[in-house]
Amino acid sequence: MRTDAEGAGPLVEDWSWPWFFTGVRRALAGPAFYVAIALMGVGSLARAAGFPVGVAALSTLLVWAGPGQLLFFGAALAKTAPPAIAFAVSLSSVRLLPMCLSVLPMLRGRRTRLPVLLFAAHFIAVTVWAESLRRLPDLERPARLPYFFGVALTCMGLTTLSTAAGFWMTGTLPRPLGAGMMMLSPIYFLATTARAARSGVDWLAILFGAVLAPFAIRFIGGGFDLPVLALVGGGGAWLAGFLARRAA
Amino acid sequence: MTIFSADPALAPYLALILFGFLPSEIWRVLGVAISHGLDEESELFRFVRSVAAVLLVGVVVKIVVLPSREMAAAPPWTRVVAFAVAGAAFFAFRRSVFAAVAAGVATIVLAVWLMGR
Image (cartoon, rainbow over all chains, first blue to last red; front, side, top):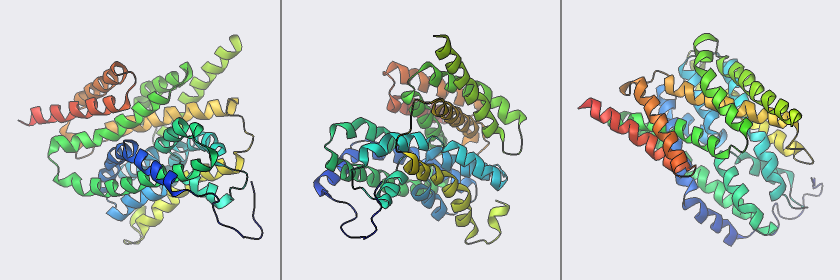
């Protein structure tokens, strides 16, 4: 990682607007609308929890992780203690670490600066991550960063608008559509997780989560139901995989 | 909203930054810091990935069982049916996320609409 003591030269070298707009077009061909529609539910949940529309939209710009946003507003709605909310949100975002680790090496050139990498990392969440893994390997290295930011900024921009739209639309929607919107995010996240499942352990983790979650929610209080569930269920799934690998 | 509403105007934004943004962003900053030479196949990362998957499923379950105004229109069994239909569509269309979302949401919309008549 290069730290530029002189501060000379452009922040990003070899910037290409054509590749940036290729990324914009690619995002508008699907992923941007997809995540935008999915996160409308965050807006309605924020409203249900008593937050202003600015916080709902800002949560998309700042947190940019659907489960974390849902958890934040959902836990606030359930009047969870703030430290427990922070802990749960943080635990739900642990998955961003391996996502960053698998995308950043593809984006980094030999002279890419730290602020650029930090800015790029901020956009990494399930949608941009999946899109990056799919397309970046086929692109020449100088094209990757502009393409990435084209996809990422388009997804986040459209979703910020849709989060606010979701906030305003909740009350006015006919009841069937309102209920449908509340179900959209949960189904989207579950489907994306299943889509990303690569091994038996991944499926086991999903199964453990689905089976154990109702018990955790019913019997563990204080807002620690999800962290305990994740550590016990995830630990169990990992252990099963670990033992299976050792036996093989 | 108890603790969040200490200062009516700014408290929600502060709460978002403290309990939403920072706890989440720390993993991305950490990702930048250690993205050099870290083995994604290590046991620690397998463990972390499983924990993340279970947590995400837990979030989904909690949202679905959470008593909200919009969700109240859809009785619990219709939500279970919606997830079953979404799962069937997911696998029927070769693990299509779009098919799952479309089928699941359509099921809930249809169920609530039919029961409201």
